Image (cartoon, rainbow, N blue to C red; front, top):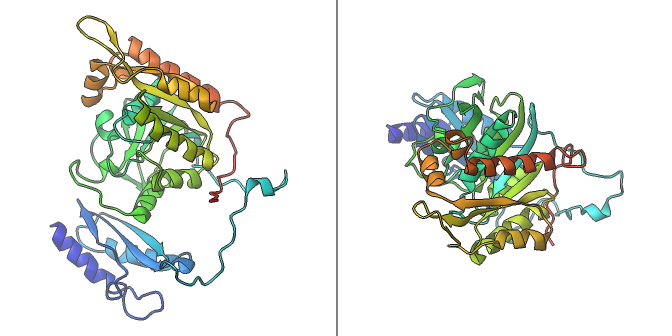
Length: 380
């Protein structure tokens, strides 16, 4: 069925003329591989970098004809603005403005946030496997237990974990036009690429497609009124992180790491990336800080201990807390019943709630990030 839809999509796209109205975008080789999954189609169109904005109608036309294909429920089309290495540019590059060159009244104009959402925070890590998504889920639930209206955006396009953590499945319904309704789990509004494709379907996307997907899930979702939107970032320092930093004025980022030196090296990269793009670092969480033996109750520092705290002190950022490595956190996460909802009065839930309170206390500070301009990326 997917191959049939893919072939029909490509045929439809032959109707779309190229950038200079010569030939069609398929024959000109401008269409990337077409991704089809359960009625959802995604692809990108390569256009000259300098003409990306001018050719937005081309993207819209392609999206329109694809939606006319039988079996297509939704289409996600991105313009890929590629520039050949060493090629001439139609306009000379302009140096990126530096904050130090601005006067006190010459700050960059603020970019709009998402209507109805007071704060957006990112939960990030320098590498995978450190418990970032589990931390995201329990942090969001901890905030909700404190009486806040909370949403979670799963920005980990390649490895979405949020649907399983919140025990939520199904397809988002359309609210109006392109706007989708988020799903809900434990009172938290949730949106994830995991709702769009089957759990075992790999996402083989390049940067422009990732950016397009993130933008749609952020701005074309009926989030309603939220006190905070928690964004579960993919590991590393790539397109997703830069997109979030540039699309909206983030209130800040929470960095998750384990205690050992190798994880801290990568966490340091993530932390420095957010500082580089002028996003406040709200603090560091040391996950899997120590192991509590379920049989003897003894404590074992399997990955070392205190590394994240020492790093936070060295970098002069808040240390938010230590989360132990316990069977209960792992089991409840795998079962889709995070510890904050499955054992709300227990000691592990108390740790997450305390971290949530510290984060909210920081971003509710009137001298915090509210109303900040979106950052300017500067490359030395």
